[in-house]
Image 1 (cartoon, rainbow, N blue to C red):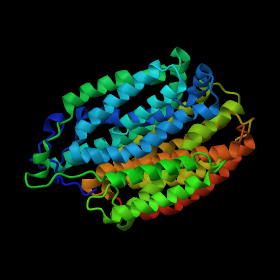
Image 2 (tube, rainbow, N blue to C red):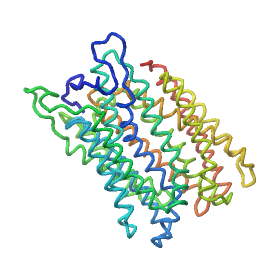
Image 3 (tube, one colour):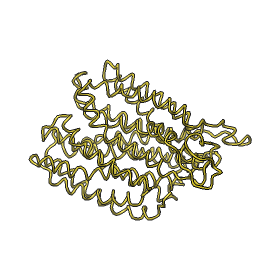
Image 4 (cartoon, one colour):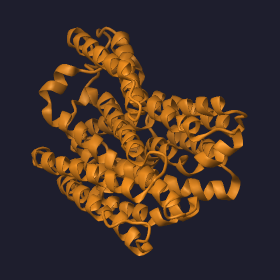
Amino acid sequence: MKLRTSPSGGHSAAGAGGRSSGDSEAASPGWRFTLPLMLGSSLNPINSSIIATTLIAIGHTFHAGAASTIWLVSALYLASAIGQPTMGRLAGLIGPRRVFLAGLTLVGVGGALGTVATNLPTLVAARVILGVGTSAGYPTAMIIVRRWAADHEPARTGGTLGALAIAAQVTSALGLPLGGLLAAAAGWRITFFINVPLVLIGMLMTFAWVPRDLPRTERTGDSAPPARLDTPGMVLFSGTIASLLLFLNDLHHPRWWLGALVVVLLVALVLWERRADDPFVDVRMLSRNKQLSATYLRVCLTFLLNYCILYGLTQWLQETRGLSAIGVGLLILPMSVFAALISFPFARHNLARSALYCTAAASVIGPAGLLLFTSTTPIWILVLITMVFGVISGLGVIGNQAALYQQAPAEAVGVAAGLMRTFTYLGAVLSSSLISLSFGDRATDSGLHTITFALLGLGAVLLAITPSGARHLKAS
């Protein structure tokens, strides 16, 4: 991750809504600069959640059961977990704007392929393409913001970072009710097609408002040797993550040979990266930078909690409470709206520490409230308690993203941001395993309470580790 770039990246974005670097007053990116980055970085979370309420309909179309349609979820998780840091690495080498646009192109291809798919394998392939393409949005956006800030010192980027976090959080939360409404109105294929117009809009905004990448010689200097991809490191990382996610995806019937393969590949990855001149994952830096490593752990725990609600609670609401897909979406909607509303003041004023403390507190209060849930619990209580999880999904992203931006080395922010998304999907896969182990064949009250006790323990861990990392953060 030791990218050979100048501190600023050589960009000038004064025409994209900011001030020139000569201004004495701190500059901040304008809305034109920020808007395409928000759209690009939100495509991954919205595609992660929008399909949740359409799996049954897709299964009916292709005469496939739940064991087959779940690969539509797992395929995007796997592609994204590997693709996010890889895209961050490529962006540092060949330019974030180029990789950003290439990712948008792949999203358009994946969306179009899913729209016309005639069988389930084609649909899974479309989800893989969507996973790879959407992986470019967030890490490239973080690099673009970091380089803009270096060109506009002193700069205020808290609002832009907050906007990226809010965009990801809102689209992830709204993806579930949006998917239900779109599928009810026009069928499940619309959840794939929606990517096509979004990509076209994103490309037009990027061409118009995001500064171009400079040629390599201007970014690195004429005398600097070209940076090389750490191909063995990338292969070992991909194998490790793929094996880990596949192992965790079915803990109900654990494949221990996969667990052993994870250990072997992880050891090989660490040994290789410790000796690599320009490692894909700088394990030495991670071992020294304990605050950044703790941020990754917080991200994993936060999203494990979040995805248990997104998928586990919604499954319980459908099977035990008998709600339709639209009904579940409408019940979850207040949580999504609350998450968005509470995020704005924290993001605008860059209250990273407060966001992390509130997230940690809600991670205990929310699961405790779930203990009240039974098949006869009034709807208003369900809505009220699920809104507590809006704090986790809203402020967790705000606080952890701000922490990563401060803790990651400037030259490695793309890979570091990608790794944060990898830990997001690790939490998601762990949540699916916990849900499967707890519910079995049917989502019952006792199964929900089993998940709840596990979440209470995880929330206690999150509450314990948060203060040591939060107190070192500063406003920016």
